[in-house]
Length: 181
Image (cartoon, helix red, strand yellow):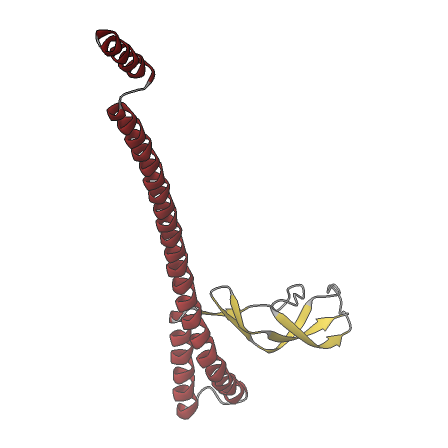
C-alpha cells in the first residue's frame, strides 16, 4: 500500500507541477477581461469626446451663421425702406431745381430736403458721386450715350440723370448716367 500511496503522491506532485493553480488562471482571465473592458471604455470615451467637439463646432458655426443672417436681414430691411424713400428725395430735387430760391415756401421745402438728406447720411447712406468718372457697371446704369466734347475721353460719365446711393458696401440704387462714346 505504501507503494501505491507513493505513486499517487508522485502523480499528484506531477499534476501540481504541470497544471497551474486554478486561482492563477482566474486572475489572468480576470486581468484580460479588465484590460478589454478598459480599452472598450477608453474607445467609448474618445468617441463621446469626438462627438462633443463636433457638436460644439457645429453650434459655434450655427451662432456665426445666425449673427451674419441677422445683420444681413437688418441691412436688407433698411435697403427695402430706403428704396421707397429715395424717390421722395428725387422729387424734392426736381421740385427745387426750377423754383425761386428766395420764395419762403421753397426755403421751407429746401430745409425739409436737407433734413431728409442728413437723416439718410446718419443711417449710413452714401450718395454716389459719379459725374466725370469712368463708367463702372457695378455702380451705374448707362441710359444714353453722347459724343465726346473737347477734353472729354470716351467711356466717361457726362451727366447724371438720377443719383445712385449705397449703404455699407451694397448698392441701394445704381446711378443713371449719360456716357461719352
